[in-house]
Amino acid sequence: MKKITFCHALFAALLASVLSFSGCTKKAQSTLKIYSIIHDEESEALTTLFTEKTGIPVTFLRATTGELVNRVITEKNAPEADILLGGASSYHIQAAKEGALESYTSPLAKSLPDYAKADDGTWTGICVLTLGIGVNEKRFAQKFPGTPLPKTWEDLLNPAFKGEIVMTNPVASSTGYLFVQNQLQRLGDDGGWKYLLSLSQNVGQFPDSGSAPAKLLGTGEYAIGVSYLHAIAKYNHQGFDVTPIAPPQSVGDVDCISIMKNTKNLSAAQKFVDFMLSAEAQGLMSSITFTTPVNPDAKAPSASVSIADIDLIDYDVKKAAESKAAVLDKWSKSVK
Image (cartoon, rainbow, N blue to C red; front, side):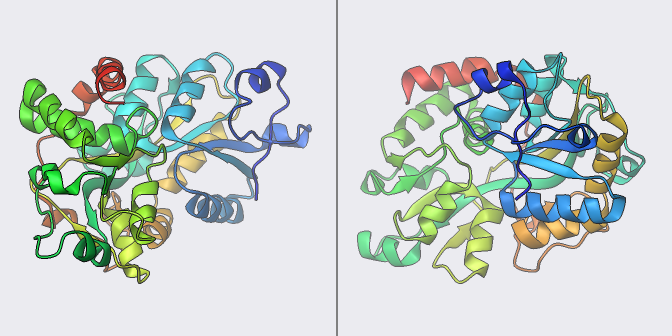
């Protein structure tokens, strides 16, 4: 793997609780350094292809959304990486508001839909993300014989499902926070919190990783999960007994890429943004993740769930970003 640690005493002291890069040489100063929220497999595939095409060496650190966005903001005056790869747009908006992101509009961004790019160029979407319900049908049939599969968000409130639902911790993961905002924006503040508090009584586990619910469904540890539809579709395609369900009134967002403010490797960072917006890179990513590319020329696997088949609410990403601190504070105090 290409994960390395930067030699920086303060960085190590503050961030010793998570994985760190290793090595510190003169040669490493010209290496493009990426904080990656997307998984190791696609991070490795994408950075390897980028190096093959450009000759620019790349290292990446994979961690959760909350950890890496906090790093980006903390390090804004002296960034330890050049790129933030992945994470929903609300998190990039948060980092931009803190003055931690560089403005760059790639020539390839002109072909992207408006929802997939910031007006000021601080972030650009690389794929579309939509939430859904996953069901391990074998475990579901054993636990709830004769019960219909949940088809709507309200169906998850069935008291019979207590302890059999897994969803991500929104404090640590953009997946979980997107779900919280899904309910707040479709039901309103009062109705949304009432729903979330009721649902929390049925949740058996709140893992920090956004990929965990789909994995736990695939291994049969839970009957029901809230996850990104592409993750559930991928496990289904791989032969696991997991069924993706697209409930009405869901949210769609984009996974994004941004450049760190004050990066000393701006040219290489801009080249990587251009690369990630290309049909080739997004097609490669989609072949691994089953996400929907934002580049109209990129191809997604046939087993992925088309955004055209999903009933989406009018998601206010700016509201989600601006209210994030207050919402997560209330979640921590009221739910978990």
